[in-house]
Image (cartoon, rainbow, N blue to C red; front, side, top):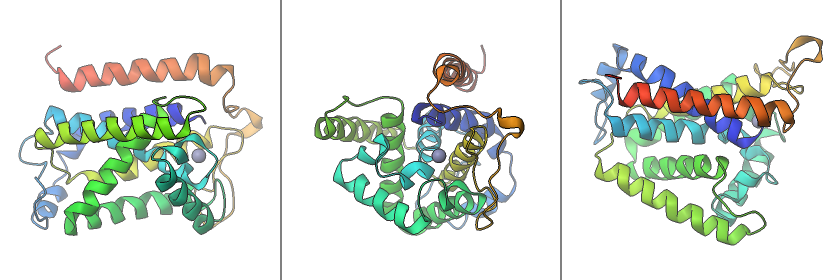
Length: 245
Ligand SMILES: [Zn+2]
């Protein structure tokens, strides 16, 4: 599946599950563990947190494809993300292996939650990386201009991060958003003809029967799936941010 399809599905997944998160009783207990994280359970997610979550979840929906150093998202922050992508590719056993599984989705979310809980700087790095991946995936960047694209991405990501910071966004939900984003990616790739090793380390690939899986980058994805997902994301944003509509 193409990057922007994954990013849109990640944003849609977050906007669908976010209201349910605040109803989870376990989060109240979790909030007691946190240092300077703002609990999200007191009332509901603030509008800024809904937006931040959608951005983070969209970025996390790109995370599994960091196992592909030649993909455009590996150039998000120039050499920094390229080296990260090389490391992920090496550690995960190549493209569409360990990072396209339930184990990775849960480990990435748990890891982000624990990191955020203990080290605010680590949390900020994760949030910045996710925003950068999301912006790159939806097409921010100039084709053929790797360094310029990285600079534009760094600038826009920094602006988004500062705006979220000034809106006092709390990040207790960070781990959830990362896991949901990775899961949205895995589900998306299971709908393609190559499928994913969902239960990695088991090698079996999950994919649609009778070879009806989507062919990445073809007309159906570009002309139908992409626009439909865009409309869904815009509709969900409107529903979440303007509930009185
Ligand atoms: Zn993938």
